[in-house]
Amino acid sequence: MLSEFSEAERSRLLSELLAGRFPDEHGRFGPFGGRYAPETLITALERITEGMHAALADSGFKATLDGELAEWVGRPTPLTAARGLSRRWGAEVWLKREDLAHTGAHKINNALGQALLAQRLGARRVIAETGAGQHGVATAAACARVGIPCVVYMGAVDVKRQSPNVDRMYQLGARVEAVESGDRTLRAAIDEAFRAWVADPEESYYLLGSAVGPHPYPYLVRQLQSVIGREAREQCVARTGGLPDAAFACVGGGSNAIGLFHPFLADTSVRLVGVEAGGRGAGLGDNAATLATGRPGVLHGSYSMLLQDPDGQVQETHSVSAGLDYPGVGPEHALLKAIGRVEYTSCTDDEALDALWECCRAEGILPAIESSHALAGARAFAREHTGTRLLIGLSGRGDKDMPTLSQFIDRIRS
Ligand SMILES: *Cc1c(COP(=O)(O)O)cnc(C)c1O
Image 1 (cartoon, protein in one colour):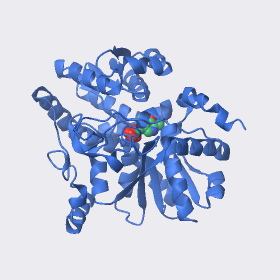
Image 2: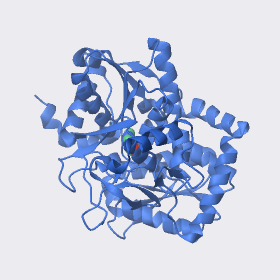
Image 3: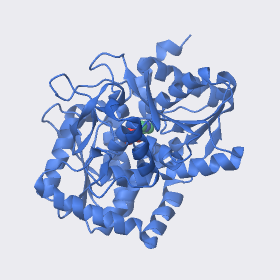
Image 4: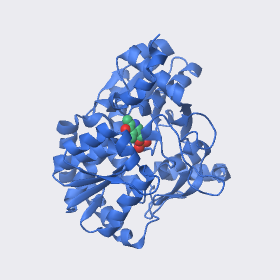
């Protein structure tokens, strides 16, 4: 259906986008987004939407958020000149260091902002779901800081394979509910968390971890993560006197990518490149490259691109990186792809791991495997465009990935 957009339609949608018309009052980004939720939740989503608009327009709320971002999260995060990678790639490489944010990734920007919103809305507890546990840890930390109890739903399989993050959540005072239903991983955890919220929509706040889900979450998460791109744009101009030629970010649900890209959308000279998880290859079930091979459909409350089998069943995914292993993607990315403002590519597990090791050795930085997808995408771009200035969103640090990386240790012991 995307190819069905005419050239005229694309340019109309692009100018509406640049004029700030998306999401519209129905939470739509062109044809994507919206709110597909049970009746009981519509009221709760409405309350959050109103509360969000009031909060984002309130200078007191913004001052509190900015203060916490500075003294608790550690913002602004640095923009690092990657001299080693620049030399190797024949490009001018800059890294936006979300790995240096508190708890080790960009997820804290969103978790903190929403925890403050939950507090403002008078919520008695926060509900969240987590797959690999990174969003759970960020939410547990933010809720502790803000002073709201929090319960994190996590598939029983994930509880086992991500036990260090489960321990971190407990240390930070969260309750973790192991979900034994369904596939006992992220999808089941989301279903269970939604169920808990439906049962108690008045007293609880659902803290969603990426730019996905029903309106207003894709918008709210984008607003909270745009601090990445605002800082990076300003830092890049200050350090280099100009804008980058291209910016790269990995895309799971799409929150760090939309956060980096959004402040550059109007800078049409800047190519924006989202890098999805190409996994083991192009076969159905072998990757999580939703925008590359997905079709439109509804998942978790929103109409967007979706990996599905020929019968429309949501497809199992594979990626070496837990944070990218998701069959959906945020609706704004679906629009950005449809109108051609952002290009989406993918890299395989092996290419991401290669880029990770190269970054370790060239820069003394161990990136998350997720972030290494952005590095691999930028490296491929540099091969074709020598001498360009590249901005890479380093969404998180790789310490959490040590159990995975240890399995591949033989590859680098040479
Ligand atoms: C969770 C995670 C991602 C993927 O989530 P997005 O919403 O697509 O940003 C990427 N990088 C890191 C380090 C993560 O923890």
